Length: 273
Image 1: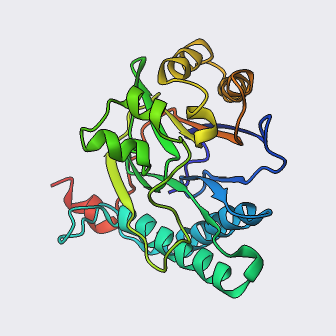
Image 2: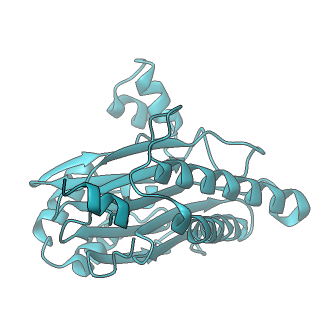
Image 3: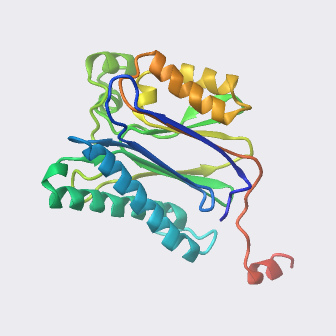
């Protein structure tokens, strides 16, 4: 589904104030309705390789297989749309490619990356992720975090051991419990939901969320809601003003109209009777 005329898009990325290299990567393909963001980790520039390999693999996978899907099909065993399973499988393939690259090249040993992929289709979106890069949605001026971090902080909170504030104060923020490339296989979390025109979606790496609270993100999006390019840059600038301890990357997307799946000739004929 080509959403070039539907999706209003903006992005910004910065190395931050403490790192020498930007190991974040992102991809925006409105022709596919696909947005991806990744935060690489590893030795000298290995994180850059991991995030780039992951994103390239996912884009190629979706580009090959998305046109083959029939619209509005649901997988009976999982209850997910076929689009969600497509993104899940693309991330699994990306995991294997990052893992294999690390195994084949000693200088990339131990590299990995978070991944967050969003696909818009038929007035819906699916998000699949591994790690602590996040997806937010702002609807009717209310900000909602769609994804749940795969991090030690979130795990301690989920177990009821600490509040989020206590866990953040006691635990290093950058300890992820799940990432691409660490093992040959990986678990991928999927969330699906409907999309309304003017919903605003934010994809971001933890270089933003470690420096800027949800309240700060919300306030910035409200203030610059009419100019997504400005909003993206303001978020990055705010993270830098508050320390910029990591690479900072954001992608913003806003559907401006409905985008229902087009029906085949058979469905068009019988839906009128």
